[in-house]
Image (cartoon, rainbow, N blue to C red; front, side):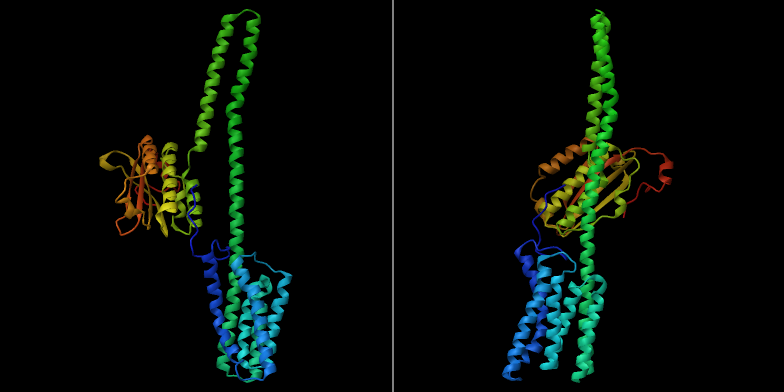
Length: 417
């Protein structure tokens, strides 16, 4: 629908980073939790003999390597969520390192169980991830009680590990769900495209089948008249062939024009996809895509073009963080009879400030011409606040019978929220 803007610096959950800054942000969020390793590392300075100190440094380096391979690399690279047998070795080494250091060195090393619980929640399969987290935290509690440390401190440490591990379990479930939603959206798009092709083929067959068959029959009849030197009848058949072929051409043009004419429901779905991909929050109620009584094909096509152009400007030029889309049905302005439908697209970007000093571009000029063909109008300019741009496209509504408003359709004079 529209050209996407350059990716933002804010990384998204479950999606590989798109640039170096996003990679750096993810690394910072992961590494900030390493501050709690200050307790076990501080225990290695002057509190143990040479053998235990060397053992402690070796274990902490091994532990960090395993943790990075399981969690950091997984998050930064955005790898697929799921259990891999290769995860068993580093996870087992982390658990062994936490147990051995807690027994050989000091109770400060119980902090390693927190990282082990987080790693277990991140890499274990969904059904047993919670069990693995609870098992790691239970081992931490048992070793803490054996070491005789303060129960209040032990409870806080165990609670942190339990919450961290379960939170990571929930995060992995969220990532799996998001991946499934992306696959489902791609499948729906592919099915919609296939259905559109089938419908176009069916419509063309219905339009051209009868016309081409009639042309074939009249051509054969013309040939017979020519063989019999019945030239007047042959000339009449040629005239009929010309009329049928011209009508077939008109029908094909109308059918193709209908497929090329944008639909509001389709453009709304495309707008959601484009704005979401550009990390712009969209405020557009789902009932906006419902059929509107009295909205003709030409008028709907004009509003579809307006929505497409507005969203294109928001994505490419506005620098906005939010976009609001509304359909407003009201009385016609200037005392005219009838009703009108107004599409309003507003953003909070910086385009509005620029619009105060520059005329409308070719896109808005062409859009004004499209709306004029449908007896509509265009109003575009800066928002009333400090930032933002508002585009309003208005088209007339055709008269409808009262019965159509009793079938669940929104009544006139309302704003769809």
